[in-house]
Amino acid sequence: MRLHVGCAMWTHARWQGRFLPAHLSPGERLRAYATWCDAVEGNTTFYATPSRATVESWAAQTSPDFRFVVKLPKPITHERRLTGAGEELRAFLEAMEPLGPRVHAWWIQLPGSFSPEGLGSLAAFLRQLPQGHRCAVEVRHRAFFEDERSERLLERVLAGAGAEWVPFDTTVMFDGPPTSDAERDAWTKKPRVPRRTRALTGHPIVRYLGRDAEERTVGGWRPWVEQAVAWLREGREPTVFIHTPDNADAPLLARRFHDEVRERVPALEPLPEPMPNEPLTLF
Image 1: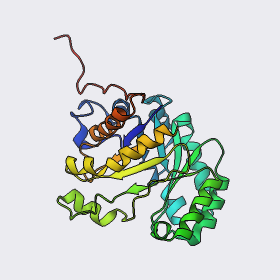
Image 2 (image 1 turned 135 degrees about the vertical axis):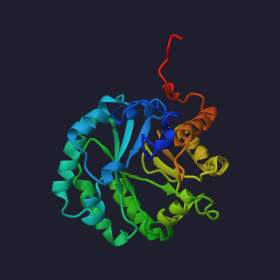
Image 3 (image 1 turned 180 degrees about the vertical axis):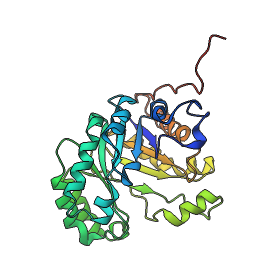
């Protein structure tokens, strides 16, 4: 029984010397991160497909049961809007091959302008993806959340491909005015959509955005603790990503979320022991 938790990235300037040893080179930080969390969002692939050598490095730094939820590149999802992107998709999938079983899902994040009228394109795109990997789709158009027919149609498309609907819960972010520069930035950039908690598969994926104040983040994730407990008891294996506007304490918060769920479900497999901030010495 597993609950995977993670963050939006595996390296952050404010983690150096706190969660990750300060002396680590960029090419070793994923290894250290993987002792704090057992999953990560692959956001960087949205902006550029990495070289195969880079992806081989990611695989070398993680165990086969570590989970990458890898975002498809922007040219596929936002520029071509899932149509006529076969060449870009093949190049991306080839580059990702070294990750092997570490790819938990291909993450298809669609722009806010992608409306229910585009569901035919989504269905056709899901059919052309190779078998053997899960798909997870994140939509931001409000019609999918506010119009029951559009919601049902999207669920039908996803179910036909065995794909999951990824909720991005920003409700806590927008339950009061921003109080920091990071929160003000998030206020202008993050989607404002209702919280959605229904899973379509045995491997639900959740993205949760809290606030920079720890108590507001923890208070806001209570519904997700309850939902994760329910999913685990149903035999599902969820993956939950914890965000805050500045992400300064995200690894610690992700582990705290896992701890809170494990208090309710003692059979849950524990997270690994974090790497020490500095190498151990004899003196």
